[in-house]
Image (cartoon, rainbow, N blue to C red; front, side, top):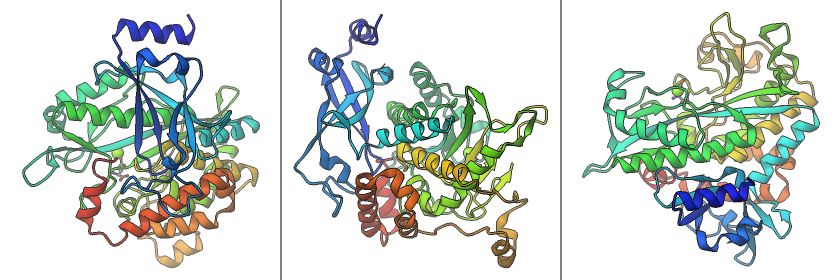
Length: 447
Ligand code: GLU
Ligand code: MG
């Protein structure tokens, strides 16, 4: 059966009445138009659902255009379904969803985040490399109270009582994710109050970014079914652990992992080291894409296991780039970028990380020495000598770093770079002086 026939059969058998055409914008808000299934034929034939081009000009605060995005209310683009991503939604009876690529006429739209990631995947392919990835999300489960949402528990890292307390909702989430093809590898309580982590199986880069959209949608909807609010906001409680979305990465050539040396499964390969060096080199600018909200920068602090310096380490949870250390008989399979959270548009974040890594490979950048221990414990002069630098402390600083980063600007392309920077600048201006409570209230249900 063709994809179209499979979809038509699923729609009939499962009584789907609406298909949500999903896109994720520059501000990382996930949006959809739901199309009546009786009207689906033109879209199954490849036509797109229309949206205003100005959708890529909206900051997180409200549905109004940010200044200087290069976009105006005049202009229409079209979401074309990637039917390979179609799924009936286990948490919304009568609804299915499909992820989309945005087109301007016959061409992928220059402002489309998914098109950007596709270009970066193609750039890796030119170098005979494929990238695999997984976003490892932490999130907070909150319950409504008369004083506003409050954590659903007060447990600490991996406390079994948290799994018992949230057993029903976590079960609903893992089953719904699995029904959509995302394999949840583990479930456990994270350190913060009401904080959980459900790592999912890695996938090729495009699928990994798609999975991040599906994950956020599913976790949010399943929590709501249980009368709870799931939020991925990086720092809800200033003195408690934050919510990261660590980005796990690996490289392969001709289907074979090249993370390590062929005969030394515990030694990082030359391309992997250069890829990591590229990420570290561009990290201050990358932060405007991987940790792109004002709130994100409250999470990136020394001694919170979120990585606050430009360094890497083997099994070091205070390093921005960590090589997870499996048991000694197993090979190293991937590296983890801690400087990423779920306020990042996954297509933009992963695409930019790939661009930075490939730059490391092209320029044969040297990785330098792994950091042992907490980099915050080194003296400032020692850090300086080893080029272990503090990361930008605010979104404003990260935006300024991206504005200076020719490589990333070129990778994004002038249109997307312009609309993206304009949206984040508008958010920085609107939110930089907000109180913490006001900021969290504004974004708690957006992410
Ligand atoms: N919650 C920490 C963060 O903000 C990460 C803790 C861990 O899983 O190592 O990134
Ligand atoms: Mg964690």
